[in-house]
Length: 253
Image 1 (cartoon, rainbow, N blue to C red):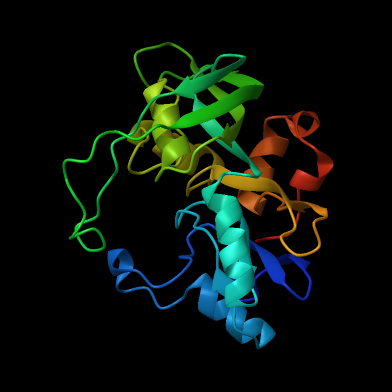
Image 2 (image 1 turned 135 degrees about the horizontal axis):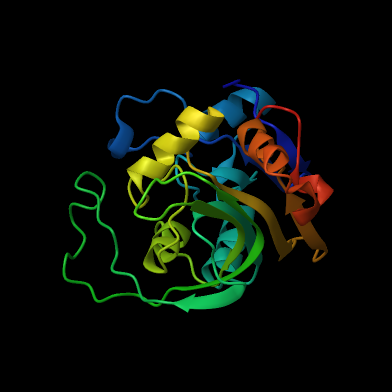
């Protein structure tokens, strides 16, 4: 993994990068041994203070936005808290997922023993909604579970709420866990991708984000191409036509 973070958008108010999978956004008690964080790497790279606006799970790649000032950070934070933007993710999941659907399934907050010590453990489940559609499917003549063949789907997801691990938990909820998800996925399918396709890591990426620029009021579309390992799977499975060309890359992120 290179320490040069791919910048996908930059102006005088904000900057957006394509975060590599496996990189923390900022220091966390969850991974106390980690020494590399997107915030510090980006500050060092551009020689300027940056303020993180939102999070991506450590294993998730894709669009990550920072502000250059605390004032812009507050305005962007308001946009995110009101969900006044559109986020699009791509995921590779087990099974033949439905053509499309809306997962309306409240989620109990996942608490971490380090960072959530003071949080209430008895909080009620929070509203969580994810819209999805299936872009492509494939079947292999291998028996991994109890079925004679193994099926996989490429799914586009748009979360309407922002719960922790929402897409990962929602796809598991409808029995289509994401490949490479060590916590919410299926180990035998994760190992199959490692052994057959040399593909490890979480197959979930934030590919686009659409919002109104908080200062210029212009419509802003941020696009982060898929990492090489994800792109390689797309090509091997013959799925290139299922995705916009801007989502596919031959460069390593």
